[in-house]
Image (cartoon, rainbow, N blue to C red; front, side, top):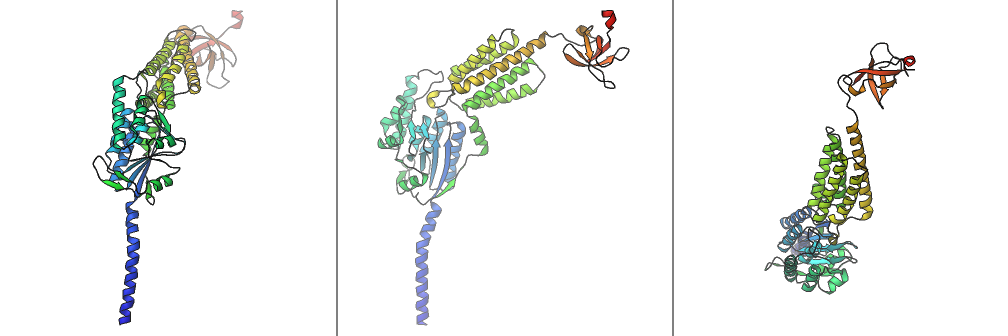
Length: 438
């Protein structure tokens, strides 16, 4: 009995030891989950909404941290400020990782990185160039610069980052490579991979929103859960592409031009309207320049003028030049968003040739005589029978094949006939007396 009790006691002790060793790790594994999402491309309202949802999901799901992997040329100021506010007030630690190698956190992306609890960069990446750009394409007024400086200073101070560098990114458009950014204290570390990043920051302490809780990061062994952008948002974000926006405008304008040249076709109007709506959506989420927009409208006006004013293509040529110039000025290049001449020239040339072709067809159409009623201008026209024996009568008159019927004797294939009347779109013909004509 004593021996049995000892055995039972030993087994209980072993079981307790196993539970003691296993239970804390299980609990830790459950708690140390990191939500991971990616921001790629321009900072738009679509991206801002996605990041806001990711922060909410991380908090609601009890995740240990939110990791945002980022590669952006910048974007809209309002969208950037929305993301920054979400990161500064997040109830969960936020980590921004500029990756992969070759990526950048430019303009708005730099300020977003500054606002995170932990900012990291992969090798061969860069950060900075956050100078505001005016919609008119000129120099930004001092009060706008001063506002941006005050904003980025407050963020850098809150996250204990180098204020001088943050200010220089705004005032002078300064940028830094990953190693330099760590050296000057603009970001926290350089990590070659996600795994290295999580291992490096494990054990660090971050403070949630001003005066909030202190959280010790347990990231090295954390489970990673992907939080992907919904397909609708991916679609909308893919439309925020300068090349697509320019193509939509060019093709949409040609389609509407075609509809103007031959009203009632409907298809041209529908396609053109859809393209223009998509183009305006793209432009609404990209940093555009008002000069480029005005040149764009000028190009469209010149193409329309080519449609209604006869000439040798002067208006179409002007439209091409205006369209290419619009592409060069349409987007703010300092943000990293722009169009190259190698793209603009072919698109402009095709648009110009298309406008010229549509205008020529419309002009010929307007000059052609109207055929209707009881013959009109068709009466007296001479043509040739093109149908075979036993087939419905078809005659070739004035460059077109017409349905016809004989006024008297049915002509044979190849016979010459003269139009004596017209019934709707059917010609009434009679044979030509070749001997009388001679």
